[in-house]
Amino acid sequence: MSTASPVSRKPLRLGVLISGRGSNMIAIANSIREGRLPGVEIAVVISNTGSACGLAVCQELGLPTAVLVSKGRPRAEHDADVVACLRRHNVDLVVLAGYMRLLSPEFIAAYPNRIVNIHPSLLPSFPGLEAQQQAFDYGVKIAGCTVHFVDEHLDHGPIILQRAIPVQETDDAHSLATRILTEEHIAYTEALARVASGDYEIRGRRYVRRDTPAAP
Ligand code: GAR
View 1 (cartoon, rainbow, N blue to C red):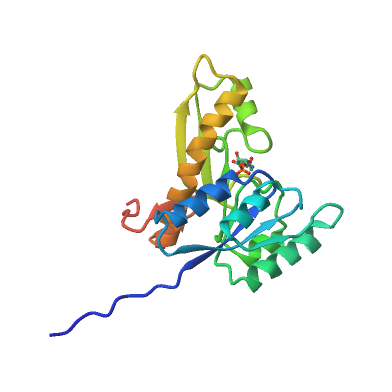
View 2 (cartoon, protein in one colour; view 1 turned 60 degrees about the vertical axis):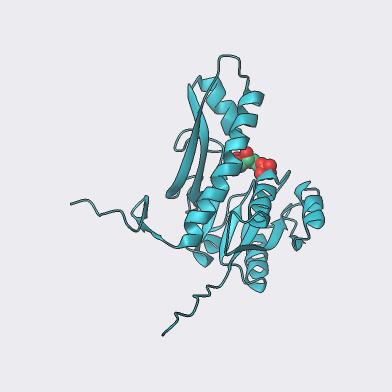
């Protein structure tokens, strides 16, 4: 009788970049701890400011952190330090979680289709800052969030998934942002599970699961 040996895949090591509160980072850490992201681990959390609240939570969660202050430094120089730190921690996938900085072309080239971002709108609507306020002010009836690969343009690369919610008559920009954030936490885990599976390809701008037939 022959027994197949179990396939042991290397864990996917995340480098999570934050600038502030870090609630998406915490949601990902919780998903890992609670077994919703098998084969995924956080190698390092990097903040571009020492005052990011998320850093304190990392300590509680026992996650390795690095603070690489960006203020006052040329983008390319700071990004080179971030990439070096990611490499030191053997990071496979860079996860932007409220990282409020544009990445240099050199950073993006260092991790082609290996950087993901979450944005609190249904892209391509409302890229940039304060997306929830932009959506609310515009008067949209459906809002949501997007997880996408990062390319050289702002909030622009191939979309992995989106989650939508109705805007209610009683909403203000704050309540809308709060409800979108709840969706973000679900969306990021789901998107990372998809990326970790490796079972996808990127056709042009489109993220497609491997079992999806190509258009005739
Ligand atoms: C989140 O709403 C995230 O989508 C947004 O910043 C917030 C960070 O919250 N990111 C962007 O707007 C990027 N364009 P968090 O620090 O609690 O995860």
